Amino acid sequence: MLDISPIALRLGLFNIRWYAILIALGVALGLVMACTEAKKVGFAPGDVIDFVIYTLPLWLLGARLYYVIFNLSYYFANPAEIFALWHGGLAIYGGLLIGITCLFIFCKKRHLSFFKFLDILVPSVLLAQVIGRWGNFINQEAYGFATTKSFLRSTLHLPNFIVEGMKIDATYYQPTFLYESFWNLLGLFLILLLRHQKNFYREGEIFWQYVAWYAFGRFFIEGMRSDSLMILGNFRISQTLSLLFFCLAIFFIYSGRKKVV
Image (tube, rainbow, N blue to C red; front, side):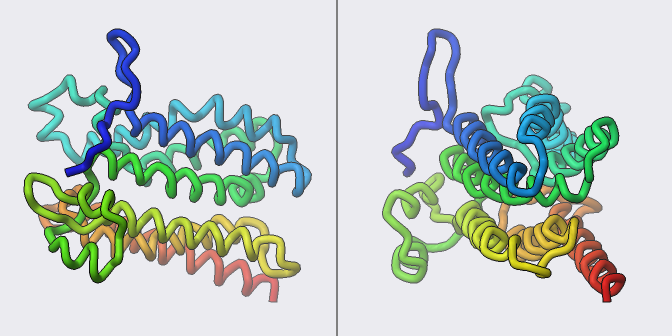
């Protein structure tokens, strides 16, 4: 069993959970990264800060609404849990869709390049995802199907705290949180390595490559999860969206490069 308590700090009647701390840490580090990149490409860091401050609550709202909408039967029976963000239940696709919509409006109002702003934010989003998935680990959620201790330790060579953290109700499970965190970390490394290569990227292409990269990995990782949100009975919502977003991203990357040629 996991030795780490989901509660990091108790302040009187208030409990501060690791889940919230990790999300806040991901946002803070991502903001620093985005401001640094903004300076390099001629954007005012103040615009990045304003956007995050103004819209962060809406990102969280979108991520929560997405999760609640596709779990309506549970939340109808337990309406108080709708507001219990500390129990987990934030869906990245919901947050991204709301965030992108807010960014479009923000850029229109400030006369900024929408796709250039997206390119600035992509590494920050990946970094926040890398960190945020560990909140799922501490909450013991977003895990995969049952497996064995031997597989986790001898095949994957995971440290003992992860192996034991994947033991839930006397059963070991696939650490899908770790697979996704690592996949996002690899994507972050590749984008940071390649994004300033001369003639490598066109405006907006970093964003679409992020969409393609994340959707491709999420499609397969989602297939391993035991707690997927479903639609029409047997279809996993995140897999369906991942397939759609991957195809859209490839189309826009190809179209953009074809226009240049």
